[in-house]
Amino acid sequence: MIRKWILLFSVAYLTPGAFADVESKGTQAITKTGVEFKLPAISFEVFESNKINAFIKDAKDRWSGRNISSRDNLLGEDQMSPELKSVRDNIIGAKSADDIDNIIDKLESDYDSLPLDLRYFAAQFVSLKPFRGIVYRLTTLAKKEKITNSALIVAVQSIVERYTVHFTNAHSSAMLNYIIAPYTSKKGYVTSQFETASVFQNYLATEVYPSAAKSLARLQKLEIGKETVLWDNKVVYGTTSFVDGLNRYKILADVDRLATISSIHTGLASLSYACAYNLDGITSLIKDEGLLIGLDGFKLGKVDGANDFERVKLLKSDNFSSLFTLRDNGVAWTERALVHLRQGMNYIRIVWEETKNRPAHEYAMINSSKIIPWESNIEVNLTMAENLLREKTQIRSAITGETIIVDLPSFFTNPPKDLKSLLPTSFDLKNKMIDTKLKSKDTELNKISYRNYHYGQATDWNLISFKTVFPELKSGKDVKVATRIFSEAWNGNQVTILPFTN
Image 1 (cartoon, helix red, strand yellow):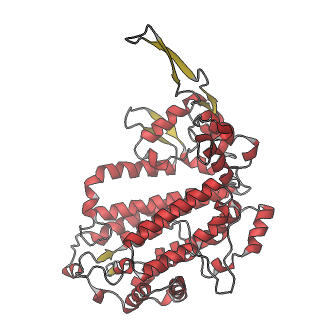
Image 2 (cartoon, rainbow, N blue to C red; image 1 turned 180 degrees about the vertical axis):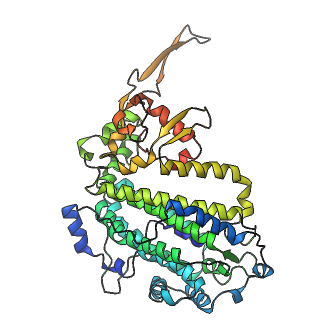
Image 3 (cartoon, rainbow, N blue to C red; image 1 turned 120 degrees about the horizontal axis):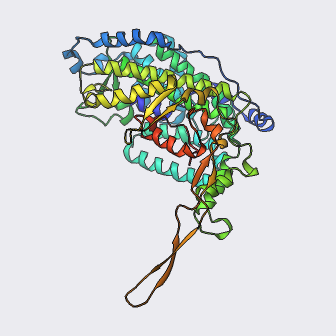
């Protein structure tokens, strides 16, 4: 359950107190100047590739020849530290968002003196800090266009409805309000809102990223080893849950810690790439593209769908000339994204090697018995992803057997100066309608016209833009074939980074 929270919130971390300091004067400065977002220095341990074999050996040795002891089958509160039990009870007893915030602040201030099991929990739980009022903070940005505002309202309403069905305790309501409601900071300010995409990006770059790196460093320094660390599901479901004790506890181990580190790296890769490009105007793009397909009305009252030609025409219009363009220090951010992708993959490799050698246990957070049957597929996919992130790699379609060379690292070290350069350049514009004649029983011939659904489809791309990632490409027309082979290769669809090819 801890890992699910981290996966959900992996791109939003905040150092203690910093969230309260993001006030309107900072918002105005970013809006006026459009400054670049400074890349924080690396403060976490970087996995050197020549050390990974040693880590894998340690992972294998941790469980080699070890059987789950009878103690591991008798899970209960006596295996939890008094401090962890106290924090659990405080969370379950929380009545308001302020109660949750106080718990997070206490865990932060006392972190270094906490026992192992509580430090493992605290290193992750404090990552909820930046989400206090996050829905409220995003509403001003969403309200700039009706379609984004409506989409956000519907999404939040749906989440809240499902949440309140399954989580009915008072502390569940407190957690929900922590995410949704505005609040007054401990310094006496009402929290500010994100006025533009740049303001939000700046928040990610200057507040979120450093805090996430701190979480990484904390988890890297922890070592569970053969200690028993438990997760109590009552933290989520409250005191009236799991009355018979069945499935109440999960055993946490270093493999779970390493999986969490990998997920944070993955989230930071996305965050880093998002900070590399200008996103101001993206809500207007969503509105205008929505008009093409009939969301929030129809452009000029015309119902005609939105093919590739119309969408690309919109994206390349003067209105969006600066959208998706690389910022002045954008290359530094994309290179950092590659660091995180590689680091995340290194940790996943260790997680996999340890899982293969770990005895199955029904109370393990990562139960090897549910994963080992897929060993061959996992190994092929993992190896392919490692190769793609390391160097130029020949990949093969698992369907047709066709091959292509992919240079994925170059896409991050030499990124497009404008992501719109990846958009198609030519389209099939022949015959919007198809005419045919069909004979009927009671008439000689019926002339019928029907839509040509190939009309407007992309047929060519900018070769120079794609040779970075497909270095042996001979023609822009071959981009469609290249991306198909990429998506059909083992794990290719998991790392596809070409969102504008169609």
